[in-house]
Length: 252
Image: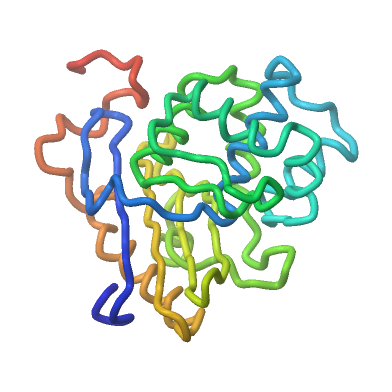
């Protein structure tokens, strides 16, 4: 990525839920603004407050799904305020075991939450493996149905969706400009049974074109494709027949 966009900063982690092993990693503890990826925490807080019971079919459920699938900012702002603002981050971090995720200094600016690739990997596995199934199904269903065009008109098919068009994915993307720089993230779950957690975070110098940066993220994920699509088994893996998640047996 730095070859295509000089001066960029990147954080990456790829985790195999079936084996519990790391497939690839680069600066997993690097700190980045979340941009819209924090909507995962907002959705989790809404569901946790309701005792992990998803809202019934209707406007409330539609708003929650739209916030995730279309990355709707106005919906996120309403829910962020309604469920405590920075408390959304504090409580999610405590419940999910996030060690380096911090709330924004400006309480209303949810997009300025700070996190790391490692913490987002933990958050995804918290959603897939720890929260009750009805709540997880709602979140993962929305991410699996992520729209190519976001609510603000941005093409959010960069990164994971574009690099792996024939693979099952559930994604939450992020983008914004801050201090003149471009923040752009592609994160999510890849493969049958959401086997792989893929988190690729980036920050690019001022003046970087969105299309150029998006292409760089797509190329970055494409380079990982052989390890994510079954073309080859990640080094040291016992194979793809193990059930996903930390509750799987150590050998299978």
